[in-house]
Image (cartoon, rainbow, N blue to C red; front, top):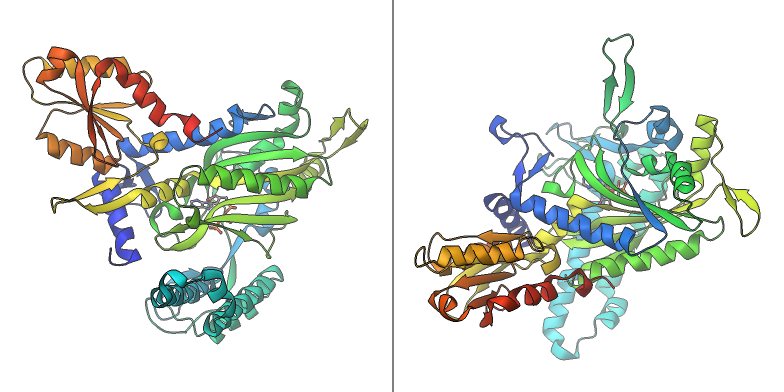
Length: 511
Ligand code: ATP
């Protein structure tokens, strides 16, 4: 396929054409950075949630779930630091009047250098063929070393200025690198300013009595304020975790790249409460667990990497992102943060209530430390969608678009297709669906030729098609077609449940 941008455009239009994602309020020309999940999208999204929830809650006896409200007492956000420090540095181009995140402009500049390294690699690979040693090339080629050095210098300067709130220096760096506005092509920049990302709203009937509230910018705080409720009612012993899936809202300065950066999105977060001093051990443990969870989906080991933070948030003493290779480059998919006792301490202070854990093993009370894993559900959706989109040329010269979604996440597991609409075939097909639908999401389709129906199922990622024909009525066998290999085999109708169960089982991914 031609280039990454083109592929990404195709993924976006495919997701609309096949009922995965629609622009929010489309009939009113849409609302920027808000999206609706269509019938296929919601199934895929629910399957991702289940894959996460089961791996966290079902598979750890010391992790429990929670579902807290989006509205929280406004003091929560003072305590958490979001009112004072949940800002992004913004910058405007005076000519185009377009607004950007200053750090993202610099990161995009770095990505361009990274893609040059990628090109150097590809060229060298071509030249040296099988003899090519990637690691050696990366550590010895002068041009690559120069580029890598430049990346390090830029990102270390950027981090230093952002942590030190030296916004004038951030602007100077943008000018020094000659970063131009992609729209106007000029370097005519305003100063860099801080912009708070929280959405404000009001609760109450009259203006005087109304309370200012915020839409939560992360689900984590709902977990922290319920720490004691959960610990006491469920008699949890440290170390233990609380998991939650829910909506979060951020007034992003620039929301683009489809569902990668939205203003309303969903997070899957788990806060793991531990004894102070053990945070680095658990931080490493969760880094390892989370990368395994991702890689188990077989979406390409090379598409993941860790990015350890130099620029730590106000609450963290170690942090790393799991980055995924999206069509527009490696970007953050999940964060693993060692949050210390910052949040629980702050809630103690602002609420005036003690939030301590009595540890029977050492006969002492303490404020637990926390290691968090936080993944964006929508970003995870985008990884699956963009990674599974394939255009294939078949042996007969025809082409097909297929979504090679991991079986466990596929919106529908099986489509049952009567060869014709007569001779009792539709009834037989419906009987088969009835025998499968409690355990697997099924589809019934009778319109168009069987070939066209296969293509439609390929395009929505259904791993199996079952075709009912005349022979089915005679000997109880059906044709089972595999999405990826397109191979077909004759199996007994009675065996279908067992065959499909084995192929789509969570056990193939989590163990
Ligand atoms: P970024 O640097 O991309 O703005 P972040 O570091 O602010 O992300 P976190 O606060 O660590 O993100 O949030 C945890 C996860 O929530 C992220 O890894 C990402 O998957 C998801 N997420 C954050 N902001 C958005 C958004 N605007 N739209 C969709 N997902 C998001």
